[in-house]
Image (cartoon, rainbow, N blue to C red; front, side, top):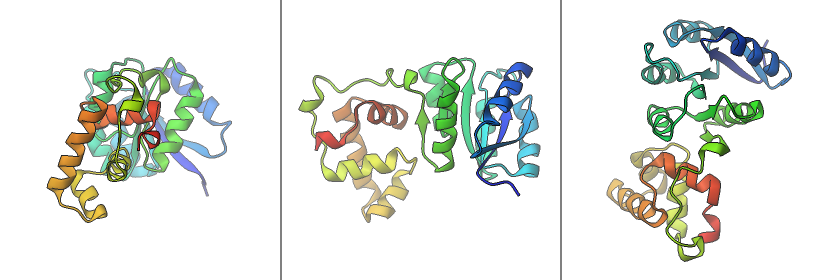
Length: 209
């Protein structure tokens, strides 16, 4: 019986598929169940093998890799990108579609392990090399003040919760949460939840209270 984190890999390059299988075999906490060449093959494999995580390249312009994410998530898996192509817009599209982590192929493979481990705990993880595109707060961080309530909201946003889920957890109205969200985005000069995740990874927020 398999223990640890079970993974299915989607990648069109045989050398990458082989390298990932070899590398992950050194990590006893991660087991690769199967490797497929395209997103169109993945859904059937996911239904059959029932992995915890799908690691996929997003460089399938004719095969709808981003569009495949919601259907994969419906099967109860978390999706991590291990991408040949990369832009901040692609990262945002991936996270918006429900993806849990994003690692470019030029990053150390240990970053992919970290993303897989974070996704298994239903946390988002973006490779450090991609965190800089998030705008920094205007001026020095010492000039930005985050309230304890805003920190609670930030913590739940970066866990991927919706405004309704946050409202339910904090026993507040959705309108109140939306007001907090707008105020947080303005204070930190970010425009999306993805940029907020990147910002907090790079700068933290606890020191701003």
